[in-house]
Length: 215
Ligand code: B12
Image (cartoon, rainbow, N blue to C red; front, side, top):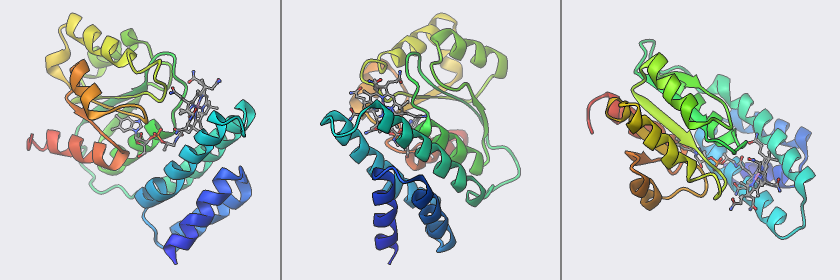
């Protein structure tokens, strides 16, 4: 039953039907499907499908923009269902999408899930230059820096941020986690990040383990 509902949600997103996407997201939440599953089995798969249609020129930029709006709206609907698990703040995380990149749906989901897990989140937004990450680390002394990139041409910016943190003498003060569709474990290791989060749930688990001193 859940599978069928999630399939209908995916179909609505791929067909760029905002009203149906919203009402099906509402139905999923009311039926008790966890927000993390709505993301992994609904939104993410549908967005990949939209991306494929864009690549094959079945969809154009206007359709990509509509899909982005749908993604943002339904992501917001998940927020009240991600209940704050603890009152005490677990740790501080600075997050942002790297310079040149405007994709923020995945980054926002990661931020929402971190907050729900008890972290304080400082979100620098999208198109964030390396200097802004450095400034934010200086100002806020976070435990963790989380970077997102969705474009192969902007992935390299993550390494620039890590190098800028090193240059400012801050690299040892923070853990660095990276994520986004084109990122891999191997790439994360190559650029000197501490971890790669294949999705927001895994990312939050890694951050929790760090602040709880397990790794
Ligand atoms: C929606 C969308 C847009 C929207 C974005 C709206 C927004 N507010 O984000 C708009 C219209 C703006 C857009 C623009 C462009 N886009 Co676009 N876009 C997409 C699309 C369809 C979906 C992205 C998405 O939201 N996915 C859903 C979320 C939930 O997934 P996610 O971001 O991967 O996040 C998950 C994980 O990766 C992880 N995660 C993400 N970040 C982080 C960070 C950390 C620290 C952790 C732990 C985890 C984590 O957690 C999330 C959930 O669990 C993708 C297709 C795809 N396959 O991704 C293309 C795609 C990314 N776009 C693409 C392109 C080409 C573009 C444009 C260049 C198009 C153009 N000609 O202008 C521009 C670039 C603009 C720019 N400078 O950034 C290509 C990139 C190709 C490439 N190899 O680089 C893709 C792959 C489409 C395709 N198949 O061709 N896009």
